[in-house]
Length: 342
Image 1 (cartoon, rainbow, N blue to C red):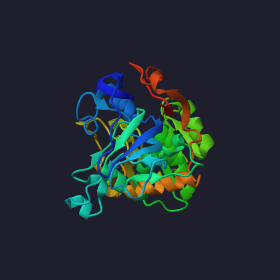
Image 2: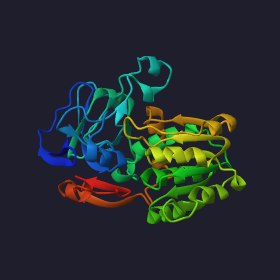
Image 3: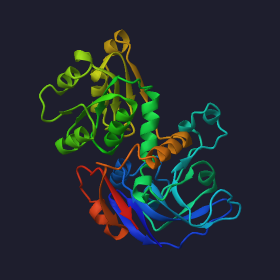
Image 4: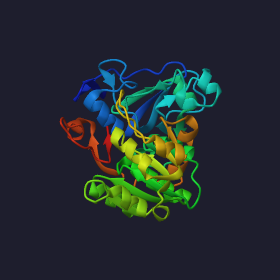
């Protein structure tokens, strides 16, 4: 089979590998579609501390397809089932799992290898994070379950209330999903970003207002003018992953507001925060990482019921052999999402 693997910074290659044979409790899935992610582009450029364990490394983590073969002991699935594959599974035994904090599992297992013709799904994921999908849901749409699960995890930690106002930093793929979720939860959203076309995309999907960090003067003041009569947002989501936007996020919150740092910064990054604002304005700040089987199942349900869709998100399709058109050396910014169809 053909599989795209990471060999080093900006070095991915289409390798020829043997098709794996599923062992006890495992399934072999023929990939129908895999979707690109901002994390993939970051990994392409510099690697990843959690996802790259060896070189060459399997690549890609948003995927759906058809079960080609079941290993011994698999009971709830059969050959021919259309499925979406969760890319992780907690151990359910460690300190954090016992506290139901599954994204912090001390032995969180990650599965990569979406950019391939086949993938071997380990028993732990088969048991915890493999889901059948209806025929009405395309493989490309189903593959969005992974990013949607991450977005759900962040959104629900904010505990949004109907009628509240949200400031979103970031107009990329996660921004598209956050806008749709905000609409679903009855939350008014103001989006800030650098790419005007991506901001307009969010406006078309339901953002109340959009603000350009590069074109609009006094962008923070302008955004706050749309939020609670200039007081700022009830909730702020940082979905960029840069220290400067982490700092900016705290400036957008009203006194008593909640700030979720969704975008992951490069390891070792530092931020400077206004301690006066944090203390006297009682801001609530927290980070969020990844997803859990609960949120993944919810994501599959929302996509299957068409409550969240790929509109404004998947902007093109490529075959595996066209990978160089997707992962380009020296690329300054990446697109929303592409579907890779093996």
